[in-house]
Image (cartoon, rainbow, N blue to C red; front, side, top):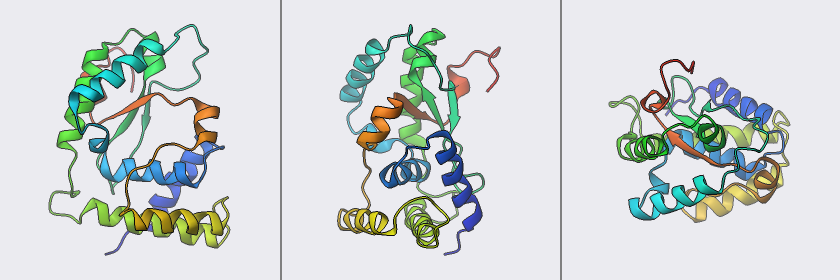
Length: 194
């Protein structure tokens, strides 16, 4: 199975430009999301809605907002179009939280296992992409220690490549509050440029 290295590495480099304090675990999470969408976060819609409502209510729109409303979370030509919608700017803009949640759930259902539909399985491509990241770390072309990558990778392999949370350092630095969606235009007004 061939996977072009350049788009994968570009995705990681851009992610690190936006989040320079990201750790190996956070790169894994970003790639996992790009190849799997948000299905892992919506195993029970009622519980997911409760978490969403609680998180939304906790956001203080008086805080300084430095994140964009919408951020690409896909690898061009390799994974389906997918976006992070950052909840703090969404709340500050008074976007309809129910539409955001509905699109999040819809994305969890319609995110494909293959892309394009007759293409390779995205999960297998994800594992291959993670190997590309390891090669770039080993050759010092990505700013992580090889030992850290290999310890983390061994753990994920033993756990059958499951989703993970952001690292503590990432959470402290960026306080992430977002949801993954395929169609942000379903809740963003036409007047807003994506």
